[in-house]
Length: 102
Image (cartoon, rainbow, N blue to C red; front, side, top):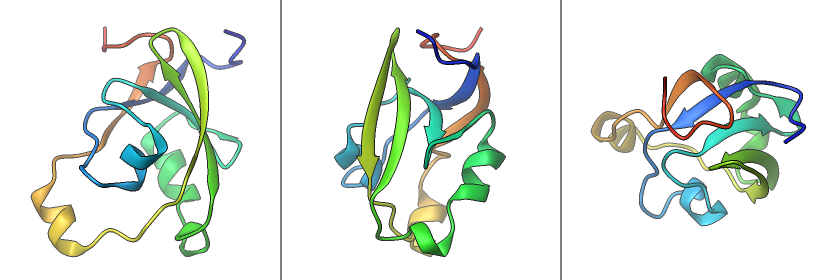
């Protein structure tokens, strides 16, 4: 695939009507970049999700099965009720190119 990395974060859950769903992100995708920066662990994504990204178009790259896929997402601020009621969206550090953890 020519990713230049062998890790990313596995998408465990995609919330209904969320920016991720609207961008085409699916359960079992592996996020490998956001804002053109490599994502190796969930901390990398948290560092890049700043107030300046909220409501603005941001590029991301995912592995869908065995294919690299690029999309644009419009992050929104998570309401407290959503954060408490929803399961975690992503689990860190699974190998890119695999649809499930080993």
